[in-house]
Length: 440
Ligand code: GLC
Image 1 (cartoon, rainbow, N blue to C red):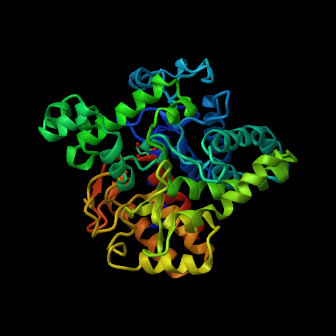
Image 2: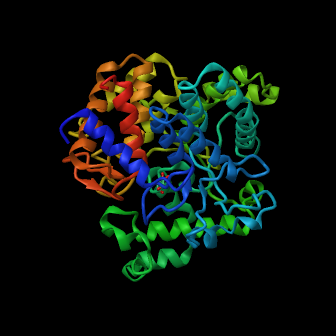
């Protein structure tokens, strides 16, 4: 693609293709449902040229909200029954009656999407919209801190790697290998029987297996989903049975940011946040300190049961910049790390550093560069005044999409596109970068 406006039109076409009437699928075939953080990113792109449609994208996420406040990571499309069969959300008394959803959540990007869409509305319209959404958003954050922060530390736990949005990210995979993998899956791994299971996977019908999550890892993820279903998606029951729980660095970073945006939304809507929740937000604001390793000068996720940091670096390492709650000194340390040859590759930022034993330039969240994490890092870098780094990542992200198309992810080494084609958040966030970098 030659010019910026051609790139913009191309990205808009992709969002149109994936528009299923009020909500957007991430991509054809592979991702037929509405996903939580995907729709947030999509709305952030749409707001630049169709605010009403952007609002609808967000509103439709609340179709899936559970009675206890949880926003599920997927709301199933009626035309595809695979997700419905796996999750059977009706086993929980909290699940909505008229749509089928998953039983887990995903990174809390909703307050960000609401704020960014709100920026494009008139003050009056915005207030009306915020009044409608504020109670629902507060209910979601209440659920997160009530059910997922059992120690009241201001750090929430996740019970499934899919909740992190970074399905096979090293920290989670390491903990799965150590703790959670059922015997039958270990047997498959030991005897290398995974090629048989590969035949029954649906994603590898559309994409080469080397670009996807490893089959044994995928089997473990499905097995955890079934365990959660057996416990009717009750956090308490899962913890009582020693289920793996991780204080995920990326998720908590996004939540800290979301808390402060939620406070602003509620101020404008004149909606009162319960005082216990405000106290928890304050705790959350400094909670990342608990995840800092002085020795390695970086943050990690932490195992909830052992309290041990999971020393597996990944793209999450940089998300505290997006949280905006860390000190300038620590932000500087992260930027120094970002500039090393482990991360500052031709197409930054890789989802796993190059020297990690997990690094694989084509495999999902174990090496490739993704537009959404780049977008979060760019935002965080700007907030701390690291404009040069932010501009460089922004330029390379836009040129990747312009040269290689709106793919799900890309090799950080030579930009080879991988994963689904015509992927919604890649297109939507490119639109946002094009507008906000004032290239248009
Ligand atoms: C994959 C990604 C997840 C995303 C979903 C839909 O599962 O890991 O983050 O939300 O696809 O695009």
